Length: 580
Image 1 (cartoon, rainbow, N blue to C red):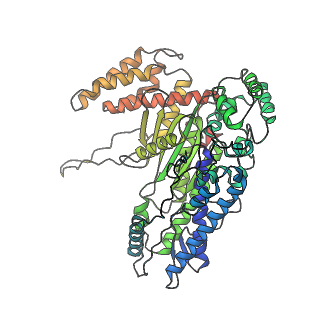
Image 2: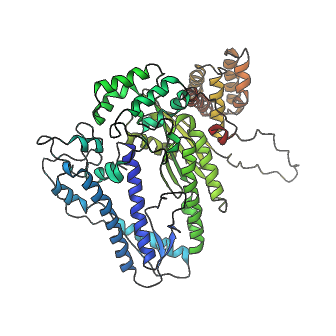
């Protein structure tokens, strides 16, 4: 998880998945029948698929210790392949003794087993308790400290394996391969993340943030001139993304930092670009608008997965469940790509992805639909999605933490939620949260002598992403004035100090809101603001509801900036329409 660049993050997930795959394959080769994952075959249309870091299997013979040892050995050999390839690529800048000290102290491996009985649920629960206990009894190799050697910038637990800059300079070739900032240090894992696989370029957060701008400007002549300037840079300076691996970025398959003039100093530092080359970029960009600097981090997680697994009564039931999760993970990759984002990880019910701001809500809705379709045999299954929108220059670990906080908020208090958190550079974060489906309401008990009453007519539940898209469209078409959300938030703060709200207080609050809306003018004529929002006002019953409406508007306002750059209005009726 330690990462400064998106490639660090992506390859950290890829590395863990490949080590898990090696362990699972060793168990299968030893005669084990895999339960989770149920299959290791990679679909024909994919180069790889994710494997979670917990392997569950049945063993036909009574020698689990040998099978565990085989699996551990397979993991060590796979790690050795990654490690040795990275060392050979940049050995000129590595301190061999420190590298060797760290090389075999990276992977933690634990195993536990129980004898099968006729109660699979009890067996699985017991083996998972044993595994948790084994992990808590951690054993460590003796630490080998190196006095005076700086720690890794990514992971402060280990010393840097890079040569001492006070003694000799890192060669320019290796510096570019490692994409080192001044003063940055890397341990053995950090080096492997940067250069394994020939240092294959991976989309940066700046490239994803700029994607609405790319789509909105790609038909301009100045944009075509920008492409020609970027093509003139050497590949090891301005990394070109593979359009086969990342077809969603074929319009501009280069580093995103090349289009943000404010980041040219970083571009010069990491890629050793000359002042003349940067001047050519700047001259071309002066004929184009500045791209918006915000990017979306999406973190999704299945709800009550532990309960669903605990209900499975046999290994075959568990295998069927595993295949359903694998089916969703495969769909997730395509869905994120269709929405111009890139997937960091999709394993089972977990998804981590980076997306352009204008596509993040549509992608969240599409992921939820795919999850429900893949797990339609399990009616309890639901997916909570958290989206954090932040400046692409935020520390990557902070962006990830924002995304995880949004995912946690999506599950609180009743799961099945969508949470969107907006982190502007200055000011407190803006947070919204709503359920995908309307929570069931308890019906009041009827007295025996009373006739059943007709249920009141209610509006169909509006999905939270559609509501945000609707507000964005109203802002985009100047129906909602830009200062309205701040006035509504101040009114919510005023009512927050009142006693416990009842219907009288709620009616007064709604009347005040309608009074404010009636006074507001928009580009569409008098009364348009009230007409557009009156149905939302009717739903307000507490000051928290009013504040939530105001914050929904503030989040929607950020969406409109991305929609304008992409030159496309939001289609809130259907997620697929947004993509199209």
